[in-house]
Amino acid sequence: VQLQASGGGLVQAGGSLRLFCAASGEIFSINVMGWYRQAPGKQRELVATITRTGSTNYADSVKGRFTISGENAKNTAYLQMDSLKPEDTAVYYCNCNAVALGTWRPREYWGKGTLVTVSS
Image (cartoon, rainbow, N blue to C red; front, side, top):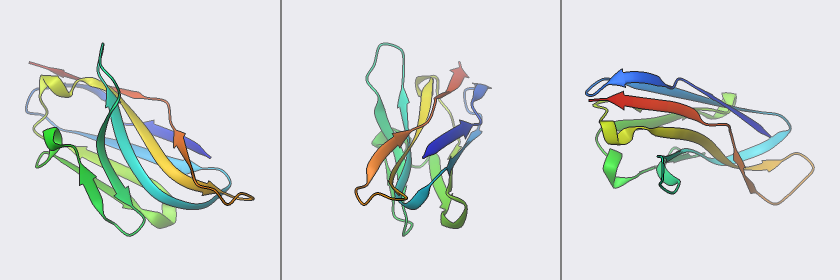
């Protein structure tokens, strides 16, 4: 299972960005897709997740500003980020909990990060 993320970039505070993540490979099922981020000198933290049934979860710091959505049939997820703040600056990583073909146990998969920089 491979994850490809895109959409990062440089934006001014108050602006918006939309991140995109696509899962590919020998996928049997995806249980959860999500986004995590890691700022310089900090640990990786949860940003938002969405389950196969559409349930979402957000970090308190992004509630009301970020929206996660997904298309199960396409194994894709989006993160719409509005009202961005300088403290949102980080490398954003796409993640999924999935079962690969030929296996039965779900595991975590990570994509390469995409950098989001918010200038003040």
